Amino acid sequence: MIVSLLTADLNERIEAAYELLESCRVCPRKCGVNRLKNDKIGFCRSGLNAVVSSASPHHGEEPPISGTKGSGTIFFANCNLRCVYCQNYPISQMGTGNERTTAELACQMLWLQEQGCHNLNLVTPTHFMPQILKALGIAKERGFSLPIVYNTSGYESVEALRLLDGIVDIYLPDMRYSEGKAALRYSIAPHYPEINRAAIKEMYRQVGNLGLDENGIAKRGLIIRHLVLPNGNSGTEGVMKFLAEEISKDVYLSLMSQYFPAYKAHEIPELSRKITSKEYDEAYQIMQGYGLENGWVQEFE
Image 1 (cartoon, rainbow, N blue to C red):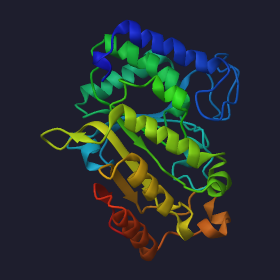
Image 2 (cartoon, rainbow, N blue to C red):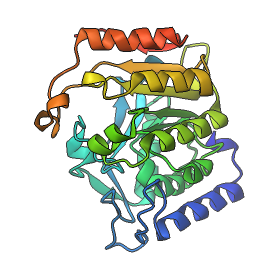
Image 3 (tube, rainbow, N blue to C red):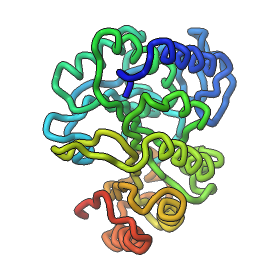
């Protein structure tokens, strides 16, 4: 938790994070753009200032995240992926939002705490990690103390993640693919499976399995999200095998059924329909077969 981190240590982390922006390697793309200059943007279409789409209490996350009072969610615009089926594409791909200085971002964090939210939920934070760290430093000086949720696509740099050790309380990453060809075709994400798995290992090293308080609210730990895609394109077998054999059979997993052909997916035959109940049940059976019993499944509509 950030409140237990010494100010000097946090300042060192912030400085190191901003160094990653100078020839950008905040994410695994390492596109090399100097994002410290206002007129320079990386692959993520982002520059120096964070871009925020919205900040509000949110009640639609997994039960230990939303709880009864809601999760204090900040949706960041833009993304380091190009998912052709993104359900939030106006935010992630079209950049709908407003630039915020780190001081303004800190004010939004403090406002969410004032609303009584259980946590601060940073959605699609990867490309703004340095700015988020700086804002957290400002907010900490003003009494910010909520647990921090890092809600990410899972396409993360281990170098960047190490700067978050002891700061992020709950990691909430996607595991989107276990096949590189699918990741490249649908998200323009080279080497996604290898990069994603290395990131998951680092997250698990930092926070371990999910821990809940006496009211069932998440305090610390890892929750994996896996969205089932049509025609087996999410590679569920590989994801579950990895989690069971290389992370923990006690890991919490959210198996998601809400795929529909958003954004450009209707142009791609194998992604141009919702998943079937049979596809979702097969994914659930694979999950069960690997002994992964903690977490949540969704009612199929």
